[in-house]
Image 1 (cartoon, rainbow, N blue to C red):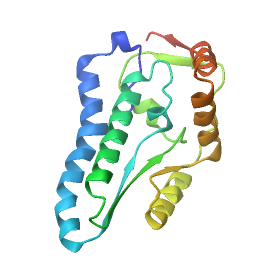
Image 2: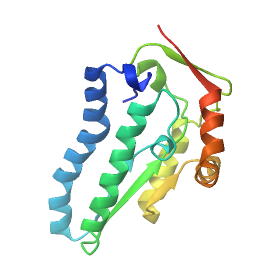
Image 3: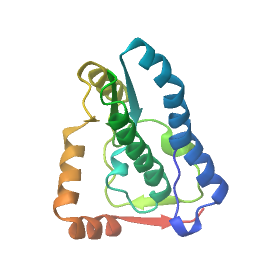
Length: 172
């Protein structure tokens, strides 16, 4: 569930709803599937995160926080299940061509200087399938998403300045 807006102005109910869907829902699902997987001695959990979990954008802080918390929960569960035969993976899509932004919570909209061309949903599905076969810790849909995060990790100050200057918020 998407959520957009200046962090200082996010509606608490919208934030709670986004956290319920993007974090608490996957945690409840993991809690439900781990016991039968343990019983079988194998299985795989694939959580859908976002590149924003690793590098948030202005005005998407609530969404990024929910996805980052999902990733930390996934990492913890992976360690807890290390010798169980159950793998835990995270898929980090970037911009995807869906109606996601039209349906997100929050009021207003961001104006971007550069709008990335999204990938088709089939590309995300292909990555999920690949993840199911290979069981990586983290999977990316596009190589460019990985490069973007490498740039942000290598030059965080410059990355933040570029991102902060490339997006502005307009109230509805």
